[in-house]
Image (tube, rainbow, N blue to C red; front, side, top):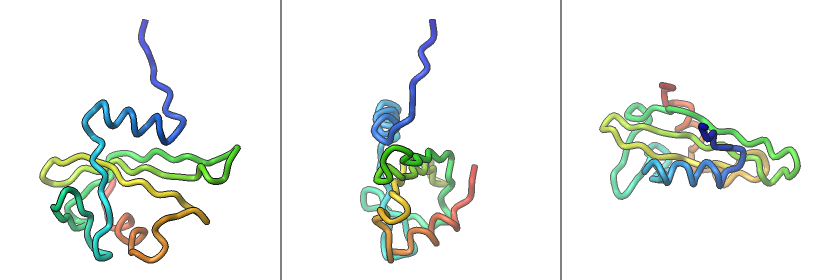
Length: 104
């Protein structure tokens, strides 16, 4: 019997990424860079591998998106953003940086 994991919450996706060793969280640095463990990456050096979007049907505070990101040097991690009125990226260039990344 095969087990199919339900990935219907942010915490379920983050736990799955941790099990896969992909739980490195990228953060925005000075509007133009993604930062991970002291290393900086430009948008052109990164690729969005997959997105996980949560609509918050029962609770608007659950509106979020997780971007699974791979860099040109093979580093894999994620970037998490609440969206709508709950975003934590109001003026840091996050949306522009994400829009410049390519989809794999």
